[in-house]
Image (cartoon, rainbow, N blue to C red; front, side, top):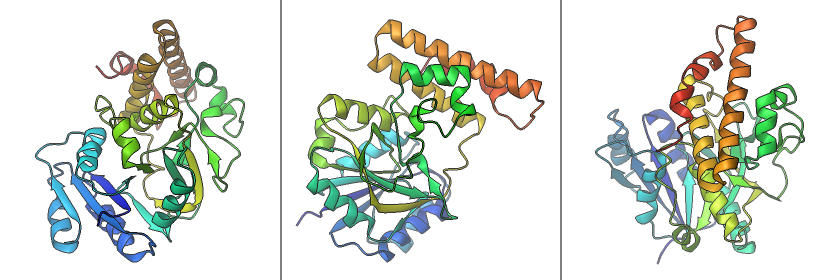
Length: 303
């Protein structure tokens, strides 16, 4: 019989974290049937061998090249046989009966389409990155003016962060992030999975946007909990640049040309404001000046 859930993990150069993730799937209670599919993105660090040797019950798809998170996820989903597909980051660990909680909510709320949970940092503090509000012209104005940084806890001036909500209640959201995202396989196929033009970052926001356009209402259940090990280390120059690149791509894909052009301009202004502030304050650790210098690269979005 087909399992209830196919857990798809796309891994790249995180062997120790991948081991912990797979061990948590074996360790934690799950009152549902599931299979685990690991798509190994040609890490060349022994990750594929680790899966073969230590987790023989896991289905391994070892790729010859790194094709990115979106394309890797699609490879795993095509191999899935479950009623539902769960995208799970390799730098996470399940806490308790997360699979069962996701499945119960999804079956009780088929209108959701995409279901996520509550993510915690290793120290037990909330990692708010399990979900986000959608990018809007107002959120970009707040970014450009610096208001979103000055008032991080404000729902008005930092709307994408869903500030003030500890992810401790059921709630519909604009975006369920790909670190923990359950969807019926039929819905995944209806949406044609992730858009592979998003190499990494933004593919989940795009998927959620397309789901909402089809009438679904993505949601969070606090009963599904994971630890997210590297969510706090997302401020390198490369990662900031990829984030901005995906924002540009999302605007150009889903907005009118005029509105998208306004979005790109606001992103450039916001980056410039932060780079200038860092230079004036002589904050040598800030990544913003380097991101500003790379603006010709990221403002092109994904070709």
